[in-house]
Image (cartoon, rainbow, N blue to C red; front, side):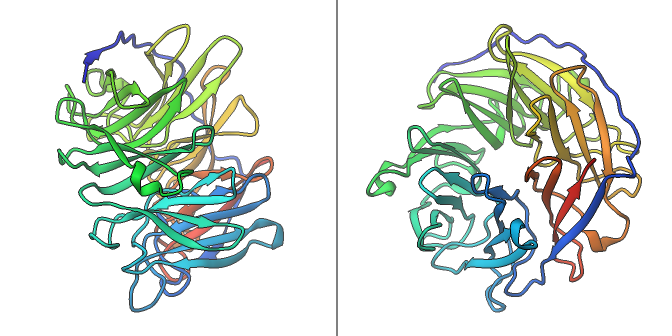
Length: 395
């Protein structure tokens, strides 16, 4: 595979942070018990269409004797009614950590990192019309799948895994979920190495190209952003993090496409490191091909730091939102927004309370239900200590 460095230009954009707005309200709406309701949600919720019905997974909990995780549903139109729709077992796979993806044919797809036939987890389908769960592929020599992206036009489901078949540094794979026997279409597209970056954490398909961020390694040791054809060929380095510490280190969260009349931008976030801040960056995909810019820098004591799951595009196309897992007034993280069509200003909207009852350690991101109402998950805290689903409403 070809591998070369694309043109990279670094430019400082805008860095602004303000205090918490007191009119914004947050509340926990579900406390995971660690038993049949599940425990430790580490991924984002997804909404099925615009129905107000949300689905998510927990890494642990479920059947008391197994503690292998669940798929659950929250109906926001019925007073946030909570229902467990599947409990994972040794046979069906266990410990899901990647967010579910929704297909146009009313199916949910997801992955597990352990159990199943070979012990490496699987890819599964949950049919929303008949509520049938089935495994469509069992990993043989790839492990720890951590993100999925579904191209509804082609029926191809793309994913990243921490461990690949030819390297311990991770891989990119695909499977055709529309095929009569999906397992026969599984392909490993790309294997990472020390030079390309290691442990891919998220990917997105844009203009027939895959963009993937890796958490560590690469030329400067702090992760990379890689672009490749959708078949895994012609891999190119867009940017190696760590050369300019101001741009951040260790890109982790999901990549988000933001478009205006003249340009497409890919927005991402970095977790930061000891001598390197958490940041929001963007890459121009059309007029300024593969140029990277700093959009905003997080400040742990004010706006928070370590945004695990990156940004989401709002109903309002000029705004993106996210949560941090650390920092803020109570050091439990914050809820923030960034102006993606203007000056790139970063604004804190809510501090996660010091009271553990709300939930903390937000490893999953957000979903906006309607306008200015957001749901998210916290890995820890709550009434039982096993995490929460929370709701934040902004005015």
